[in-house]
Length: 110
Image (cartoon, rainbow, N blue to C red; front, side, top):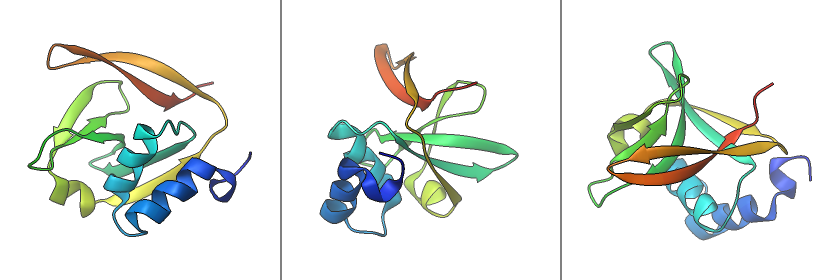
């Protein structure tokens, strides 16, 4: 597998959610076990990976370039520039968020 179009889980997520809501698509993609597509928001001199939607209000969990978790509103993330990357190589990083340990697939560095 070497591209977005060959990633069956990515194509399934786009089909189930639709092509316009990238936050929902990446959230569903991770839910079904997808690990090779990474969607980032760019702004303020930083590139932040979209991790998940964390509540009914639409708060979005992001992983910044320094490796720290932060949150932003659904509207802010939706209105930000998106960067899409595909990588066959990923690793899972463990992070703590609200007293829970979570594993986040990240593009392998180096």
